[in-house]
Image 1 (cartoon, rainbow, N blue to C red):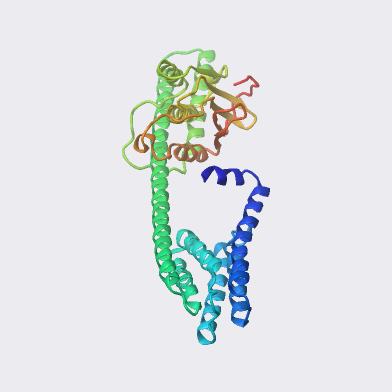
Image 2: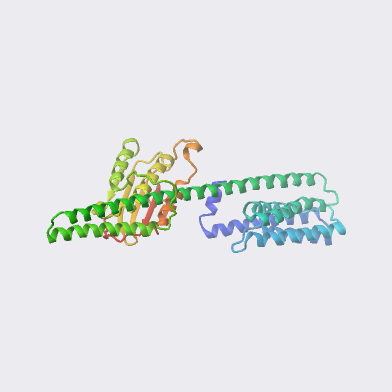
Length: 388
């Protein structure tokens, strides 16, 4: 079933075709009831047919028409027809199977995605309308019980999905909060590192007899350290710092080489390319981001690409800034249980990190096959066209 949904979702034309097919199936049920059961159509039959077609069309997720704009009219029309039939003549052997199904579909969507107060009002209206549809028949029989049970099951399952969605949103917020805390700690380490270096160099120049050339070189180093510290502060200043700072050094490109070598010892061979000159010129905060992106990507390769035979890692400058790219040729996940596989928040944390620096992160199938993670963050260093 997931494969069928994925096939329909690959193009807008297929999505439109799926919607039309869905509407046609529901309306076909309405027509079947009208032809097979109502052999001599009457005014009540016409009302049921109109209500069925209208509600079925409302159940289709048309582009540009919000869910609530479809659910409210559907509930209003269904209840209006039901109350009219209750007050007058009941149709014989016709009560609206397709309409009841469409109402349950709208009920599920409202309970999952509508605001809480709106769902608390509109949800019961849709559910009771679905339960009342069989009562339109002169002899509803067991169908009333059937749709009452279906309504309860659909409502319970939809509320469960809503609760899971809310919990996942909370988990994502927790991941983003933790990422901001880590960014703030890195800001502390970076600023402390650069300021300490500036103080040491300035003190050495003050108490040591140096020539004009040596003084100029010292001032140049101080200027560069100050610029890097200010750059890091500008990129991370919006992060609210919480907790005690960590004194461990921030991982950079040197640690990235060690990380790649350790991965290659126990996994597929990983080839690392670092553009010449980046080791000396790349600011420490951007080097830490590159290390974090590669580390998370290699962890995901172990989990989700167990059959990978090669991994390519590239760190280089592009017109948009610094690019970090990790690609593999794997297609089969490792046989891990759900707890070991994790909740899928690693990429959410990386996205938060890269976005906080004004960059972008993308992850998905690569053109050569396998999976690719690509992060680009603003960087004003040298430009190079070397291949990754």
